[in-house]
Image (tube, rainbow, N blue to C red; front, side, top):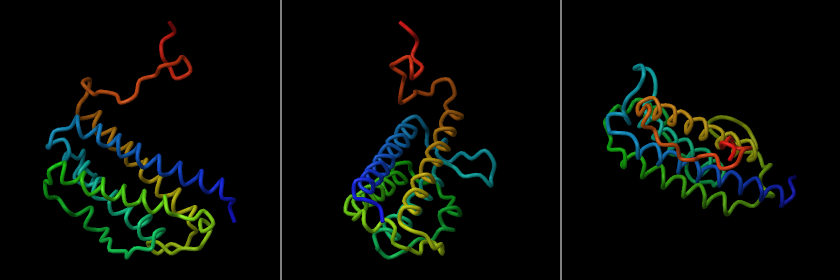
Length: 173
């Protein structure tokens, strides 16, 4: 059983990763046109719009349902087959709400329950694994959205972060 300090630290770190990931997604969407949000390099690949639908479903299923105990209402296949051209804000608003709800679930989570067994999406695992896997999955798709944004925007891409110290890669003064 994890100690509360370690469990609290893990939960706080994951909450921060979700918030920062969402901010990075919003930063990318601010640079993309509606056409860019629905662009896919090949028909079988995901667009940013598809990824946003998928992240909403994934975080809801794994954190809100799997960790928080809400009903699992996810229809995963629909996340990938919906080819309608949703307005970017109509895709982002549900993800914002999902991340906010997941944050509340994690904020209320008792660290003593992190090792409790759970069944999520047919997998048998504990809460630690579910939380870490979901955060890693989220981060992977944030990187995918960033790559698509950089591909579509090209040289006019605006970075969200710039190095400020030599250790971070800033030029020496």
